[in-house]
Length: 415
Image (cartoon, rainbow, N blue to C red; front, side, top):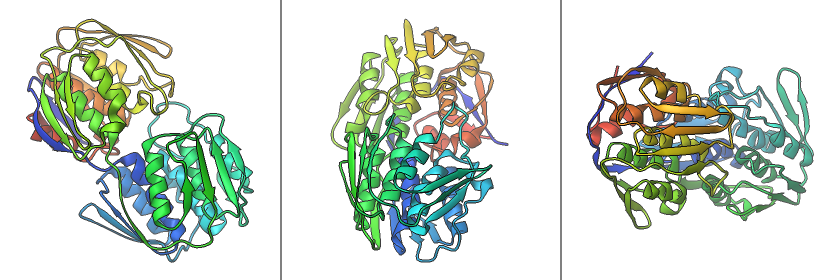
């Protein structure tokens, strides 16, 4: 087991290049199964979840190479349509293989996906969408989907689920006729997936809007694609600058994806200057509390950035209110922040954060990916030494978080 040991109090300064997006690259890697050829994926971050997805592709029969942030997948030979349970349990995003394997082989056998325990994340919308395309779905300890002659149809999602939107898109690529997804998720990662699919020869239109249209095609071809920048990682580095009263520049970002986070940090007193792909954030010595942060589907404030922003508000002047509308267990980091001296009260999905003058170092445990990042940020400003256990959760979604923070002046080491 590894942990981060952080001596707080250093002001972060410098430049940082943001890595490729975890939540974009995983469905794109799953989609490589569809083209029966060579896919070259660039700007792939070195994350535990990426390693897991590549292991799954290998088990399915793909040939995979990963070097210098570039993945080459040869999916010309698929030898299995059963995803090993031990790998499925490692991460939630393994569920997007349902759509791609079903579209490629007509059958997929898997188990319920793992990942962070941040709340109930049912896959009923995924399965309902696949059934509407013509798949037969059975659940007997395992999930078995069969459907060799999928047909396009109109699908109305009850909720704009990112995973369900992705699975339906993937399954519909080879379906006969046209598929229309209404109330589709609008996240930028959906747009990136559409870009990759179309680079292979698919016909997908409308990603980023409430309606996505897929015209089924019989064949795809080799392609090359560069993964978008990780907006959640960028938001984490922005929060790190804010909580330490720092001044950092972010490179290789997409500013339009960051408006919900940028607006809240400006409200807290940060000065943020941007152009299309770079940002400079200058934080005051002490942040001002933010009246209200309510998590919502994109383009609302992202649930994946809520824990990090909460860590920043722990030492802000005043009281901040958080309302978590996406995951009911997204507050698992709060007990650990309280160990550091934070003043936080929770009532259901509402958290009231009263800023304190200082936090104090302690031993805390990361219980999920984004909550773990929040504990690291709190450790950056806490007096004394903070040790964050559960680094394996953090490594699922951040590429060398400790080293990046260290390059900005943080006193942080991996033990």
